[in-house]
Amino acid sequence: MSWNGAGVRYFSGWKETLFWGLLLLGIGLVHSYFLRPGHFWGDDFAQYLMHAQNLAEGRPHSQTGYIYNPHYPQIGPPAYPPGTALLLAPVYRIWGLNWTALKGTMIGCLLVFLALLVVYFRRSLSLGVLTVLVVLIGLNHFFLDQTNAIGSDLPFLVWVYLTLVFFQQGDRGEDRQERFRQHGESRSEKEERPFAGRILVWHLAAALAAWAAFATRTVGVVLWAAILLADAFQHRRIRSSLVWASGVFLLLAALQTLLIPGTSGYFDQLSIDPALLASHAVQYARQLAAFWRNGFSKLLTAVVAGIVSLLALVGYYRECRRRVSVREIFLLLYGVVVAAWPSYQGFRMLDPVVPLWLFYAWKGIESDWPKRWDRLRFAAAVGLAGVMAACYGTMLLTRPTGPLPEGIGRPSSQELFQAVRQYTKPDDALVFIKPRALALLTGRRCSVYHPVQDDAELWAYFRQIQARFLVVVQRPEAMQGAEELERVQFLADFAARNQRRLQPIWANDDFALYRIEK
Image (cartoon, rainbow, N blue to C red):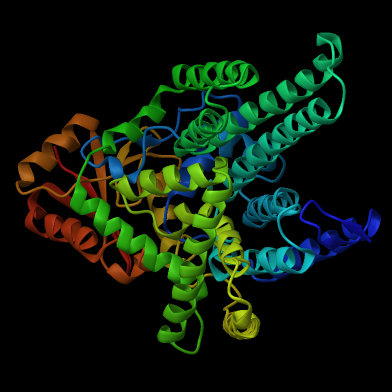
């Protein structure tokens, strides 16, 4: 056995490595068991895969079949940052559009992320508490959903926490240097140089990882901002090693922006709206509460979420009083940016927050309560653990398996893709509510429509992009909640009002393909 920095006993050496390896293997097997063939309709995945295809086949990154509609930027920019595509390109190169292999990459990212949590929190949490934290995240229903989808969420987590680990190592190097100064005799510049060199290396590594986070999801820029703010707060200046590291980060970010200019489409969404900020704060709070979703009761979900959040606030305050570090500032900056972003993105935007939320909740339990409350605190911790175990057990036992009933794998969806390939030419432009999925799976150019008050405005956009075909969703349930009913119905109503200008080509129960008459 060995002791960690918090004075808590751990397994020593290979035993600890074996323990964590077996635990992560078990979590990976659970995720593999619940993998489902196909993919949901949300078509972010398609743009990542089109970028990956380009990289694997030697084409320019941004040369996809997606036609960006500046009147509806919420669906996504002309090009995504290259991080996720770089990860998926080798997988696509070897296995092609193999959903099992692609989703396996997402499972691998989750396991690497969990391993980084172990490294990052090892000195702050006991073995038992850290084990509970890893299991709570690794087997949560939200993360089981995310390994069933292709996206940037899990790769982004890897880079965020790798950055935090690297920066943490640099801080520990400086702590060791300071201890030598306090307990040893004064040292010459030559003797100090190895310490400074190691700190610089860790900070440069953190800058590279932070750029990878930015290259995976643009909001990752707040991570490096948090590092600089934390350094200025703690040292009343930015250390020279971080100045050099910042130069590396900014150079890489600038090169990425220049080489892939389409990613600037994100900024088309920026706006300041206090009402939207408040609305998103409420929505994301509900999503965070849904982390504890169970098959028993919504009230139980709300109670557990409320208790954990209250403890997290206590723990956050306690940590801030002790020392304001990168994680405290990152949590605040990231939360503000996510709440202020005009497009609500669901739980996936909370991924980086969840480990910190649980960490602060435990620190809230560890707070200096009156001694007479020790038994109450112990009983509450045991009770919470029991409730959590019951919630997770219920969710896992009732979780569906087998092919996804909706999405791109549905027979009617496959019929649509076949009809588009059959009745259109490779250089034709189409309009559809999920343009990137249609572009990926048919090899055609495709754009999304935008709701308008006057049909003439939409016809003008169709002429601008030289659209030749229109795909209408005839049964809104075919989108499986992937789109708002109003948006789905809008195009169906538009087609009904403009029958003279649309020639029916093909239809099934879910979709209809029309040729746009000139």
